[in-house]
Image (cartoon, rainbow, N blue to C red; front, top):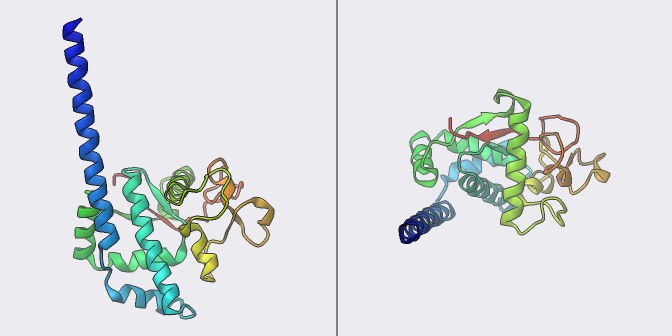
Length: 212
């Protein structure tokens, strides 16, 4: 009995230490993502792509990119699909700074974060899981109930808010599907990548690799 208690105590201590180390590492990576300075030319490229955006709106797109990286950090090795076209443009421009991006990934995620277009994913199911993961974590970070949201998380609201012509416009529920083809309230339980209840994977443009 005494041996069992000793072993149990050792296991508890080990698990506690592991949890503390993981939390410290996560907080360190969160701090790095929060304070990282993106090259100014990325914002300019976003503005070139969408010239109707003013400086404050371009800053919102860059905030969206930072938020996406936070979500990928929390997701770990799980794939996270990209729910915003304007943020995807910013991410793609960042990748072109190959050495800077590689260093950022190594320090922020402990691995290289691949940019995988939705159409290049292995299956529609893979894209569906990725957008659901993005939705759940985005809701968690903004204190939103994923199955009964009172508002859209930043990444899911950006394209409509910024009037992105080729963007993904989400609604809180399917009653507004005529003007917003992607339904936020259905993502966590629906079959479609964008929660459109149709199995269509067009509502996510890309994803961060889950271990590639």
